[in-house]
Image (cartoon, rainbow over all chains, first blue to last red; front, side):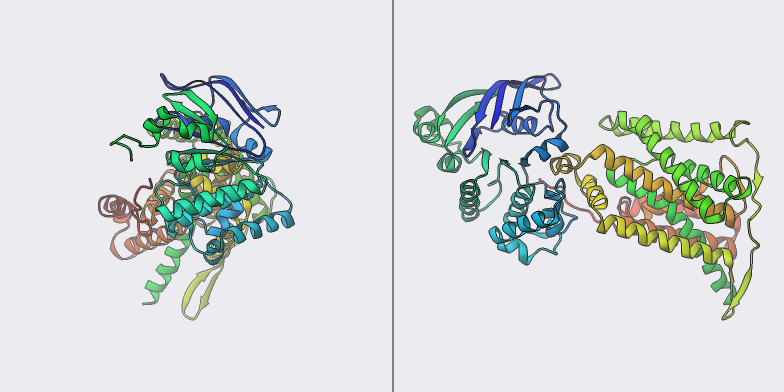
Length: 240
Length: 294
């Protein structure tokens, strides 16, 4: 479904992604894990067109999308829930969700998507008229994911969905991600919480300073001693 | 007392015209975080187009206003495309200098003989000014036209921004360009749209201004432009109701100063307010100090 080949991205003179290649198959949950600054978000941002790659190829559903502007990529069925949620605080919860359906025309279909989202996140229904900026962190994350689903994506990209949330909410968010996937949405997930990400993912890629250093089945990666030490906090006092 | 009430009505007329200009400053600031210093000159072009419309092209006043709005929308879009878009992600000072350049260009280009010419022109009103005495207040037909036009335009803007898809896109672009892009919003088009709307409002303000204070010239946009900018800052730059509130206050301050203190102090007091706001409450009356989000 999504295929990335030899992706190179620069921020000025900084070579942020150095030949990253990976793929996501239909129906999977794939996770990219790695430390801060490894290039996880940059990878996602180049997939959704916010950052332009210097070289390499990004193919989505058989189409090369390197030079497609970000606002058109959404229409192709790729939805990116950005890091830090980036909900629109000056819009109501309902308006935020409707922004997710910005590219869609059919009012009845939009309505049924909205009902699905409300069913998945009942709390958003209660707060639909409230300004999104007044919600708690967990609720804002639900708005962000709900908004991402409103475009009816075939591929949902989630960047750090558990950031800043309490452990209970982290569990809730991950079980939601799993359910979304079970209902037929392919998921590409970036997480610093590698432990949780590896629990839900089918496959994983480990990024380090702009390169992929390991890849494989999530269960294998989880068992790999090098990964355990570096990313799962085992024998590592600095782990956070 | 009656004189005071009359002056308040005069001030409201002036303030509502400032509001039409101030909205353009504040909307453009909202989406691109840029003070469009050429905005006062777009107002001037609007005044000229409207003037030609009802004096030389045989248009009715409403048609002249609409024509000026269309011409200035196009002008606003072109200005953004040529002078601001290439600098959008450059340091802010670059776009600001570019804006000042556009402003000077419009003023001096308009002064050329084959454009509008450098002279003051007296506007022949297409209708007579009529004075009415309503409950002891002196009201003119021009004031009624200004009030009605501005109220209709404010209602339209409110509808556009809070009830339409374009308006929703504008509100998202004002928060974060990239987040809006991820929703499928064409940010460039939305910014063009904002310039078009802001410029159309300034144009309508220009035509009304030319009818109310019937004299126009290529540099007529400077003072109302600066006053409207002050109004936008006073109300809270980027906040739409703030622009209207600030403009109404500015209109009152200006008119009451001329009527009861001295007309020479009028501009000095107006800009003293700007300095005071920047020193005491730079976010403006309706602005809030929002903490930076993580």
